[in-house]
Image 1 (cartoon, rainbow, N blue to C red):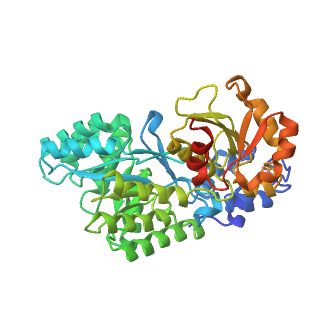
Image 2: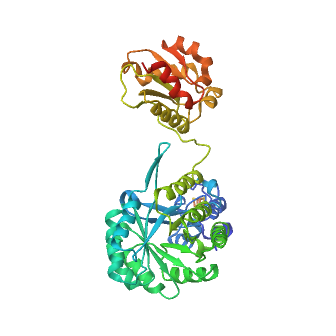
Length: 447
Ligand code: SF4
């Protein structure tokens, strides 16, 4: 349990000098208790008091990192109950399990496919976070062989799923520089697993039989001094996992119950890929830090989950945007048509797709409307004749085409006169919806 404001206050110097920000030591103590300040802000605190207060000042859920270099995955460091309260922080990591019982060809195919699970959608890059390597066969050589293949094929992170420390040790040694998660310490193996994780300085998963047992096991491990932990309540049925993950997060954040102050991991259990993805979506929503899939691995199966994760962890008040500049679609020439649109990603990519579908290469000049669509931007005064004229001028499009015709969305036909006057370009009113672009442009420019 974390300390209260009054308990913290007893340890402070009581100079009431205000150098920490708040005017008094008591006010500072209250901020520390609620996680809104750090001990470093007080220059007069004694070393003894600092050590005593470390636990109160630490975030209710510890920050744990997996991976190295460009592929560091941060999980935990949560201070609020609901995802949206901290503007969609630390998206859940998604891992795909591969067992060492697959034959060599299937292993190669699976790892190659996982290594290619990257997607571009409305200008954003999606990908899975890594592979969970499961020791299924009980054969140390097979498990190491799987790890060697995975290390070569997958550039991201790893979870080593093996409860036998002797079997896990060569794989941990192989992957240690990439900081994998070793899963899992249980009642039977925890001392050796802690030793292995400590020796290689990697995070350790802890799996309980239920919440009470998990708290006991975590307490034993932390009393030994190891705190790089990721916890698993051990449940596998969807509603129970959801209840356990919610309880863990609530107790950690609201009650500062330290044994649950660690990021969580959830394993799917549904027998087919489609229901498994739905199950994983529940865990991404509430409140897994890592989700391990056991069936799905094909692109068509994974994209819906990655899209869901992006939706859960994207702040709806900050629309996704593209950079405001000139885009070329196809092999443009100096007589290619010029379109203007807004920088809301969904608007831009709708226009881009239809220009491409028209088979007539074109330029798209994107106006900065702070990520709003055409009608919203127009209503908000962000897609005005002045803004479009300035975008045309700034974009340098006049140096890339020999004509002076610009196509505007049909919804803002009303701006054509003023825009023509301000820009000097002949304004062509295009279709109201992007879907009308191919027919419109073919009838006008096909010749
Ligand atoms: S800086 Fe330290 S001594 Fe001064 S008011 Fe803040 S807590 Fe108290």
